[in-house]
Image (cartoon, rainbow, N blue to C red; front, side, top):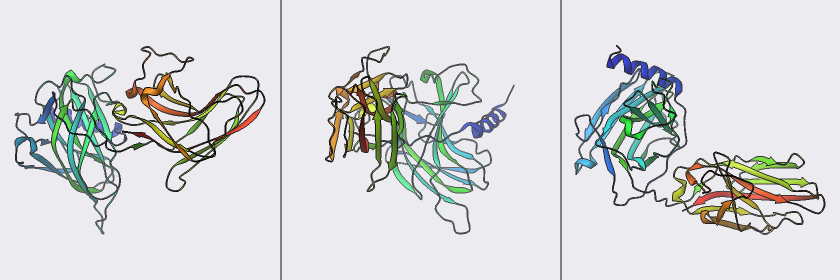
Length: 372
Protein backbone atom coordinates (compact mmCIF):
# COMPACT_ATOMS: atom_id res chain seq x y z
CA UNK A 1 0.00 0.00 0.00
CA UNK A 2 1.25 3.49 -0.87
CA UNK A 3 1.38 5.83 2.12
CA UNK A 4 -0.02 9.38 2.02
CA UNK A 5 3.43 10.94 1.72
CA UNK A 6 4.58 8.49 -0.97
CA UNK A 7 1.30 8.92 -2.83
CA UNK A 8 1.65 12.68 -2.87
CA UNK A 9 5.22 12.40 -4.14
CA UNK A 10 3.95 10.20 -6.97
CA UNK A 11 1.19 12.71 -7.73
CA UNK A 12 3.72 15.54 -7.92
CA UNK A 13 6.12 13.69 -10.21
CA UNK A 14 3.37 13.10 -12.73
CA UNK A 15 1.90 16.56 -12.25
CA UNK A 16 5.13 18.27 -13.30
CA UNK A 17 5.09 16.24 -16.50
CA UNK A 18 1.53 17.06 -17.53
CA UNK A 19 0.77 20.66 -16.55
CA UNK A 20 0.11 22.93 -19.52
CA UNK A 21 -0.78 26.65 -19.44
CA UNK A 22 -4.32 27.65 -20.31
CA UNK A 23 -5.92 31.03 -20.79
CA UNK A 24 -6.79 33.34 -17.93
CA UNK A 25 -10.17 33.48 -16.24
CA UNK A 26 -12.35 36.59 -16.11
CA UNK A 27 -13.52 38.91 -13.36
CA UNK A 28 -16.80 37.89 -11.76
CA UNK A 29 -19.88 39.82 -10.75
CA UNK A 30 -21.54 39.93 -7.34
CA UNK A 31 -25.07 38.91 -6.40
CA UNK A 32 -26.98 36.91 -3.82
CA UNK A 33 -26.59 33.20 -4.49
CA UNK A 34 -28.34 29.96 -3.66
CA UNK A 35 -25.19 27.81 -3.70
CA UNK A 36 -22.11 29.05 -1.88
CA UNK A 37 -19.90 26.26 -0.57
CA UNK A 38 -16.60 27.53 0.82
CA UNK A 39 -13.30 25.74 0.48
CA UNK A 40 -12.04 25.21 4.02
CA UNK A 41 -9.48 23.38 6.11
CA UNK A 42 -10.03 19.68 6.64
CA UNK A 43 -11.32 20.47 10.17
CA UNK A 44 -13.99 22.77 8.71
CA UNK A 45 -12.34 26.06 9.72
CA UNK A 46 -11.66 28.91 7.32
CA UNK A 47 -8.11 29.13 6.02
CA UNK A 48 -6.28 26.58 3.88
CA UNK A 49 -3.17 24.46 4.40
CA UNK A 50 -0.04 24.07 2.30
CA UNK A 51 0.12 21.23 -0.21
CA UNK A 52 3.49 19.48 -0.40
CA UNK A 53 6.12 21.70 -2.01
CA UNK A 54 8.12 18.96 -3.77
CA UNK A 55 11.32 20.90 -4.32
CA UNK A 56 9.86 24.33 -3.55
CA UNK A 57 10.11 25.98 -0.14
CA UNK A 58 6.61 26.92 1.09
CA UNK A 59 5.05 28.37 4.23
CA UNK A 60 1.50 29.42 5.14
CA UNK A 61 0.08 32.32 7.15
CA UNK A 62 -3.58 32.73 8.07
CA UNK A 63 -4.76 36.37 7.87
CA UNK A 64 -7.92 36.84 9.94
CA UNK A 65 -10.68 38.86 8.27
CA UNK A 66 -13.55 40.88 9.71
CA UNK A 67 -15.69 37.78 9.25
CA UNK A 68 -14.65 34.12 8.92
CA UNK A 69 -15.53 34.22 5.21
CA UNK A 70 -12.99 37.00 4.68
CA UNK A 71 -10.16 35.06 6.29
CA UNK A 72 -7.25 34.91 3.84
CA UNK A 73 -4.46 32.38 3.43
CA UNK A 74 -1.04 33.62 2.31
CA UNK A 75 1.33 31.13 0.71
CA UNK A 76 4.99 32.15 0.55
CA UNK A 77 7.11 30.18 -1.91
CA UNK A 78 10.63 30.00 -3.26
CA UNK A 79 11.85 27.92 -6.19
CA UNK A 80 15.64 27.86 -6.46
CA UNK A 81 15.79 25.63 -9.54
CA UNK A 82 15.26 26.12 -13.28
CA UNK A 83 12.55 23.47 -13.25
CA UNK A 84 8.77 23.52 -13.23
CA UNK A 85 7.39 23.54 -9.72
CA UNK A 86 4.01 24.02 -8.06
CA UNK A 87 3.27 25.77 -4.77
CA UNK A 88 -0.34 25.24 -3.72
CA UNK A 89 -2.90 25.61 -0.96
CA UNK A 90 -5.16 22.67 -0.16
CA UNK A 91 -8.77 22.69 1.00
CA UNK A 92 -11.96 20.65 1.03
CA UNK A 93 -15.53 21.69 0.06
CA UNK A 94 -17.63 22.40 3.15
CA UNK A 95 -20.61 20.57 1.71
CA UNK A 96 -22.12 19.26 -1.54
CA UNK A 97 -21.34 21.39 -4.58
CA UNK A 98 -24.29 20.25 -6.70
CA UNK A 99 -25.76 23.18 -8.63
CA UNK A 100 -22.60 25.29 -8.55
CA UNK A 101 -21.57 27.13 -11.72
CA UNK A 102 -17.97 27.94 -10.84
CA UNK A 103 -15.15 27.85 -8.33
CA UNK A 104 -14.62 31.54 -7.52
CA UNK A 105 -11.89 33.17 -5.47
CA UNK A 106 -10.08 36.43 -4.81
CA UNK A 107 -6.31 36.34 -5.00
CA UNK A 108 -3.14 38.39 -4.82
CA UNK A 109 0.13 37.36 -6.44
CA UNK A 110 3.54 38.96 -5.91
CA UNK A 111 6.48 37.12 -7.51
CA UNK A 112 10.08 37.99 -8.40
CA UNK A 113 12.89 36.12 -10.03
CA UNK A 114 15.64 35.05 -7.67
CA UNK A 115 18.37 36.96 -9.45
CA UNK A 116 21.13 39.37 -8.53
CA UNK A 117 18.92 42.29 -9.54
CA UNK A 118 15.78 40.80 -7.97
CA UNK A 119 13.83 41.90 -11.06
CA UNK A 120 10.20 41.37 -11.86
CA UNK A 121 9.55 38.41 -14.11
CA UNK A 122 6.52 37.17 -16.01
CA UNK A 123 3.71 36.31 -13.61
CA UNK A 124 3.51 32.57 -12.94
CA UNK A 125 0.37 30.66 -13.90
CA UNK A 126 -2.38 30.00 -11.37
CA UNK A 127 -3.15 26.31 -10.99
CA UNK A 128 -6.34 24.60 -9.82
CA UNK A 129 -6.41 20.83 -9.24
CA UNK A 130 -9.44 18.76 -8.32
CA UNK A 131 -9.05 15.36 -6.65
CA UNK A 132 -11.92 12.87 -6.81
CA UNK A 133 -12.60 10.20 -4.22
CA UNK A 134 -12.14 7.42 -6.79
CA UNK A 135 -8.60 8.42 -7.76
CA UNK A 136 -9.48 10.89 -10.51
CA UNK A 137 -7.47 14.11 -10.76
CA UNK A 138 -8.28 17.00 -13.08
CA UNK A 139 -6.63 20.37 -13.51
CA UNK A 140 -6.85 23.74 -15.17
CA UNK A 141 -4.21 26.46 -15.45
CA UNK A 142 -5.15 30.14 -15.52
CA UNK A 143 -2.46 32.16 -17.24
CA UNK A 144 -1.72 35.41 -15.41
CA UNK A 145 -0.66 38.29 -17.63
CA UNK A 146 1.97 40.98 -17.30
CA UNK A 147 4.80 41.23 -14.82
CA UNK A 148 5.12 42.23 -11.21
CA UNK A 149 2.43 41.99 -8.51
CA UNK A 150 -1.30 41.98 -9.16
CA UNK A 151 -4.42 41.92 -7.06
CA UNK A 152 -6.81 41.80 -5.63
CA UNK A 153 -8.14 39.97 -8.68
CA UNK A 154 -11.19 37.80 -8.79
CA UNK A 155 -11.13 34.60 -10.81
CA UNK A 156 -13.78 32.09 -11.81
CA UNK A 157 -13.25 28.55 -12.98
CA UNK A 158 -16.50 27.52 -14.72
CA UNK A 159 -17.44 23.97 -13.81
CA UNK A 160 -18.72 23.47 -17.36
CA UNK A 161 -15.30 24.38 -18.72
CA UNK A 162 -12.63 22.11 -20.15
CA UNK A 163 -10.43 20.28 -17.66
CA UNK A 164 -7.33 18.23 -18.30
CA UNK A 165 -7.10 14.73 -16.84
CA UNK A 166 -3.85 14.19 -14.97
CA UNK A 167 -1.72 11.38 -16.32
CA UNK A 168 -1.49 9.82 -12.88
CA UNK A 169 -5.30 9.65 -12.42
CA UNK A 170 -6.37 6.13 -11.52
CA UNK A 171 -10.07 6.33 -12.42
CA UNK A 172 -11.57 5.60 -15.84
CA UNK A 173 -13.95 8.55 -16.21
CA UNK A 174 -13.92 10.52 -19.46
CA UNK A 175 -14.80 13.78 -17.68
CA UNK A 176 -14.61 15.27 -14.21
CA UNK A 177 -17.43 14.24 -11.84
CA UNK A 178 -18.11 17.08 -9.44
CA UNK A 179 -20.04 14.95 -6.96
CA UNK A 180 -16.81 13.00 -6.41
CA UNK A 181 -14.51 15.98 -5.80
CA UNK A 182 -13.22 15.83 -2.25
CA UNK A 183 -10.05 17.95 -2.32
CA UNK A 184 -8.86 21.05 -4.19
CA UNK A 185 -5.44 22.63 -4.68
CA UNK A 186 -5.04 26.30 -5.61
CA UNK A 187 -1.59 27.70 -6.25
CA UNK A 188 1.02 28.81 -8.74
CA UNK A 189 3.06 26.96 -11.35
CA UNK A 190 6.40 28.41 -12.44
CA UNK A 191 9.57 27.40 -14.23
CA UNK A 192 11.85 29.09 -11.67
CA UNK A 193 13.93 30.36 -10.17
CA UNK A 194 11.19 32.39 -8.53
CA UNK A 195 10.05 33.57 -5.13
CA UNK A 196 6.94 35.33 -3.95
CA UNK A 197 3.61 35.17 -2.20
CA UNK A 198 0.17 34.01 -3.28
CA UNK A 199 -2.84 34.95 -1.17
CA UNK A 200 -6.44 33.82 -1.53
CA UNK A 201 -9.74 34.43 0.21
CA UNK A 202 -13.45 33.82 -0.39
CA UNK A 203 -12.70 30.56 -2.19
CA UNK A 204 -16.06 28.96 -2.82
CA UNK A 205 -18.14 26.87 -5.19
CA UNK A 206 -20.96 29.16 -6.27
CA UNK A 207 -23.98 29.42 -8.52
CA UNK A 208 -23.40 33.16 -8.98
CA UNK A 209 -23.79 34.04 -12.67
CA UNK A 210 -20.90 35.87 -14.28
CA UNK A 211 -21.58 39.53 -15.07
CA UNK A 212 -18.86 40.86 -17.39
CA UNK A 213 -18.28 44.60 -17.23
CA UNK A 214 -16.25 44.92 -20.41
CA UNK A 215 -15.80 43.28 -23.79
CA UNK A 216 -13.47 40.33 -24.25
CA UNK A 217 -11.25 40.35 -27.33
CA UNK A 218 -10.97 37.47 -29.77
CA UNK A 219 -7.47 36.35 -30.79
CA UNK A 220 -6.18 37.57 -34.15
CA UNK A 221 -5.32 34.00 -35.19
CA UNK A 222 -7.36 33.78 -38.35
CA UNK A 223 -6.95 30.95 -40.84
CA UNK A 224 -8.57 30.34 -44.21
CA UNK A 225 -11.42 27.88 -44.82
CA UNK A 226 -12.67 27.73 -48.41
CA UNK A 227 -13.80 25.66 -51.37
CA UNK A 228 -10.81 24.06 -53.16
CA UNK A 229 -11.65 26.10 -56.28
CA UNK A 230 -11.17 29.41 -54.43
CA UNK A 231 -7.88 31.30 -54.59
CA UNK A 232 -7.15 33.66 -51.72
CA UNK A 233 -4.61 35.51 -49.61
CA UNK A 234 -4.88 36.39 -45.91
CA UNK A 235 -2.84 39.09 -44.17
CA UNK A 236 -2.90 39.80 -40.43
CA UNK A 237 -1.73 42.97 -38.69
CA UNK A 238 -2.30 44.98 -35.54
CA UNK A 239 -3.33 48.16 -37.39
CA UNK A 240 -3.46 51.22 -35.12
CA UNK A 241 -3.36 49.10 -31.98
CA UNK A 242 -6.31 46.97 -33.14
CA UNK A 243 -5.99 43.55 -34.81
CA UNK A 244 -6.90 43.50 -38.50
CA UNK A 245 -7.51 40.56 -40.85
CA UNK A 246 -7.34 41.39 -44.60
CA UNK A 247 -8.79 38.59 -46.76
CA UNK A 248 -8.72 38.77 -50.58
CA UNK A 249 -10.29 35.98 -52.63
CA UNK A 250 -11.21 35.01 -56.19
CA UNK A 251 -14.02 32.58 -56.99
CA UNK A 252 -15.24 30.89 -60.19
CA UNK A 253 -18.74 31.72 -61.40
CA UNK A 254 -21.83 29.62 -61.96
CA UNK A 255 -21.61 27.35 -58.92
CA UNK A 256 -21.94 27.66 -55.17
CA UNK A 257 -18.73 28.74 -53.45
CA UNK A 258 -17.66 29.55 -49.94
CA UNK A 259 -14.62 31.47 -48.73
CA UNK A 260 -14.11 32.54 -45.14
CA UNK A 261 -11.62 33.06 -42.37
CA UNK A 262 -12.02 31.69 -38.86
CA UNK A 263 -10.32 32.15 -35.52
CA UNK A 264 -10.41 30.19 -32.22
CA UNK A 265 -12.67 31.18 -29.34
CA UNK A 266 -11.32 30.61 -25.86
CA UNK A 267 -13.68 32.57 -23.61
CA UNK A 268 -14.96 31.34 -20.26
CA UNK A 269 -18.73 31.62 -19.71
CA UNK A 270 -19.50 32.99 -23.14
CA UNK A 271 -23.22 32.82 -22.32
CA UNK A 272 -22.71 35.80 -19.99
CA UNK A 273 -22.04 38.02 -23.01
CA UNK A 274 -24.62 39.59 -25.32
CA UNK A 275 -23.17 39.17 -28.76
CA UNK A 276 -20.38 39.62 -31.31
CA UNK A 277 -18.96 42.93 -32.50
CA UNK A 278 -16.33 43.74 -35.11
CA UNK A 279 -15.32 46.57 -37.41
CA UNK A 280 -15.01 46.40 -41.17
CA UNK A 281 -13.81 48.70 -43.96
CA UNK A 282 -12.94 48.41 -47.67
CA UNK A 283 -15.05 45.25 -47.85
CA UNK A 284 -16.41 44.30 -51.28
CA UNK A 285 -18.36 41.15 -52.19
CA UNK A 286 -18.92 39.68 -55.66
CA UNK A 287 -22.15 40.21 -57.59
CA UNK A 288 -24.90 37.97 -56.27
CA UNK A 289 -23.54 37.81 -52.70
CA UNK A 290 -25.86 39.88 -50.52
CA UNK A 291 -23.89 40.03 -47.29
CA UNK A 292 -21.22 38.58 -45.04
CA UNK A 293 -21.48 35.06 -43.75
CA UNK A 294 -20.88 35.36 -39.98
CA UNK A 295 -20.90 32.12 -38.01
CA UNK A 296 -20.37 30.69 -34.54
CA UNK A 297 -19.15 27.08 -34.74
CA UNK A 298 -19.45 24.55 -31.91
CA UNK A 299 -16.81 21.98 -31.02
CA UNK A 300 -18.79 19.21 -32.76
CA UNK A 301 -18.85 21.22 -36.01
CA UNK A 302 -22.42 22.57 -35.73
CA UNK A 303 -22.59 25.91 -37.55
CA UNK A 304 -24.84 28.83 -36.59
CA UNK A 305 -25.06 31.83 -38.90
CA UNK A 306 -26.24 35.40 -38.39
CA UNK A 307 -29.67 35.45 -40.07
CA UNK A 308 -29.35 39.12 -41.04
CA UNK A 309 -26.15 38.98 -43.05
CA UNK A 310 -24.19 42.24 -42.55
CA UNK A 311 -23.86 44.27 -45.74
CA UNK A 312 -20.43 44.86 -47.23
CA UNK A 313 -19.15 48.42 -47.06
CA UNK A 314 -16.10 50.30 -48.25
CA UNK A 315 -16.75 52.83 -45.48
CA UNK A 316 -15.58 51.98 -41.98
CA UNK A 317 -18.41 50.71 -39.80
CA UNK A 318 -19.07 48.58 -36.75
CA UNK A 319 -21.12 45.39 -36.97
CA UNK A 320 -22.95 44.20 -33.82
CA UNK A 321 -24.82 40.89 -33.82
CA UNK A 322 -26.59 39.57 -30.71
CA UNK A 323 -26.41 35.84 -30.02
CA UNK A 324 -30.19 35.63 -30.46
CA UNK A 325 -29.70 36.47 -34.16
CA UNK A 326 -27.77 33.27 -34.89
CA UNK A 327 -29.62 30.29 -36.34
CA UNK A 328 -28.41 26.86 -37.40
CA UNK A 329 -27.35 26.81 -41.03
CA UNK A 330 -29.56 24.58 -43.20
CA UNK A 331 -26.45 22.65 -44.27
CA UNK A 332 -25.46 21.87 -40.67
CA UNK A 333 -26.78 19.37 -38.13
CA UNK A 334 -26.89 19.57 -34.33
CA UNK A 335 -28.10 16.96 -31.87
CA UNK A 336 -30.20 19.50 -29.92
CA UNK A 337 -30.80 22.12 -32.63
CA UNK A 338 -29.67 24.83 -30.22
CA UNK A 339 -26.69 27.15 -30.09
CA UNK A 340 -24.69 26.08 -27.05
CA UNK A 341 -22.49 29.05 -26.27
CA UNK A 342 -20.33 27.04 -23.88
CA UNK A 343 -19.46 24.79 -26.85
CA UNK A 344 -18.49 27.54 -29.30
CA UNK A 345 -14.83 27.28 -30.28
CA UNK A 346 -14.65 29.18 -33.60
CA UNK A 347 -15.83 32.46 -35.11
CA UNK A 348 -15.98 32.50 -38.92
CA UNK A 349 -16.52 35.49 -41.22
CA UNK A 350 -16.68 35.26 -45.01
CA UNK A 351 -19.11 34.66 -47.88
CA UNK A 352 -21.03 31.92 -49.62
CA UNK A 353 -23.26 31.79 -52.64
CA UNK A 354 -23.22 31.74 -56.44
CA UNK A 355 -21.98 34.46 -58.78
CA UNK A 356 -22.85 34.68 -62.50
CA UNK A 357 -19.17 34.88 -63.46
CA UNK A 358 -15.72 34.64 -61.92
CA UNK A 359 -15.22 37.47 -59.45
CA UNK A 360 -12.95 38.88 -56.76
CA UNK A 361 -13.76 40.10 -53.28
CA UNK A 362 -12.20 41.56 -50.17
CA UNK A 363 -13.20 41.18 -46.53
CA UNK A 364 -11.57 43.22 -43.76
CA UNK A 365 -12.26 42.34 -40.10
CA UNK A 366 -11.11 44.72 -37.38
CA UNK A 367 -10.91 44.13 -33.62
CA UNK A 368 -13.48 41.32 -33.13
CA UNK A 369 -14.86 40.96 -29.59
CA UNK A 370 -17.69 39.61 -27.52
CA UNK A 371 -19.66 42.35 -25.77
CA UNK A 372 -21.60 42.30 -22.47
